[in-house]
Length: 467
Ligand code: DUC
Ligand code: ZN
Ligand code: ZN
Ligand code: ZN
Image 1 (tube, rainbow, N blue to C red):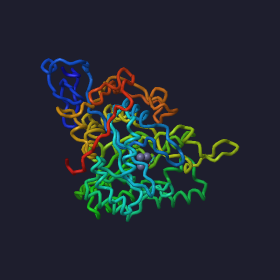
Image 2 (tube, rainbow, N blue to C red):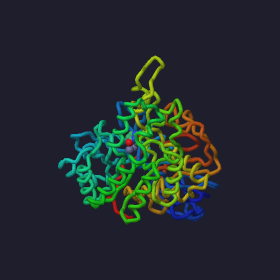
Image 3 (cartoon, helix red, strand yellow):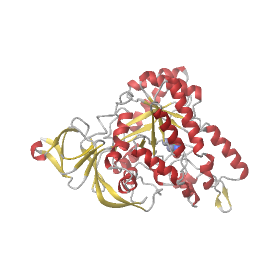
């Protein structure tokens, strides 16, 4: 007897939408077709009128990642539960590597920490330096199933920035051993140059934040990263691209035939730097900063043209953490963007936002949504076709979407258990109604019904272009 049949829905893959039933056995899709012919099942889910998407992949989260003196609000359990409500069935986080560490040891340690997750997980291996010992660990890290690397081109003061010569060494080894290197592309020099001058002029208000790290700060780093990758012969992934200038730089390199890939995040698609005018502007401090409407438009176009993918960059802090280092004076906390921990919540809201702002607004088809948030991430990060597609043999990771159901994004109705949302009050048409991970229903009827620790560490294949 089958474990599960999902009947009456339309399945959405990146290349087609087909009205068909799905049969699940032992956590995998065993066949597609007419339920009457599939056999009997322990449970039959009626998905009539709904779309069935491959579970989303969030390839950029920061749980249990202390940063700028703050602990962070989510752990791998609470963060993964929030993800499950947002249709996410796999996430990729980062090692907390510090100078002097063995990166391989950090990867293994991270795997243990992630074991409480309710959905599948992996980690990018973060390199903050490139001494011979850590470079020599790269083949073992890839062999262990972590075929992607994270490099910070900024945050020198936080101790995680890698210099250009170190980048070259990592990029070269990544090419050799089949890891996809990814960069946080902001010029540390330009950011610090601006911050020093703004500090002297007293321009550290929320609204001054994007001026410290303008699009050219991103473009300089994107351009440099691409050229360093080209010098080392490696592919390149750009985390959280935010600007038209950054995107054009990526596009030019692709036109030259260079394998560079980039992601953006919902906040860069949906919010603008106008948010920094609010008294609560500190809530929107993340790096890179929010841009203007023209940049948002460019990013939507890039998504529609398959140049970009979308992650959440979930990096959740409570309001208390966001404000804890603000200098106090008689009026309360003085505004100083350099004292606010960078990051916003987002793992749960990515799918609703892509449904509303993408699908409902006619900027993305459902198939394109699947491409940018599941299929292409799975291909880039060595998970395809286990994940990222609904076909016989694939894992039964799915999210059901009702395009007619409406909802509102509100902190007290989301499941991250924190006291704000940067999308507070936003109306959404199109809502995930059920999440299924490895054939088990984990979110249903607005409730979490999964199991702590049920997620599995997924061994990712080495990177190969055009897989
Ligand atoms: N950006 C953030 O907003 N938070 C954490 C790290 C980063 O690069
Ligand atoms: Zn980053
Ligand atoms: Zn990040
Ligand atoms: Zn971030």
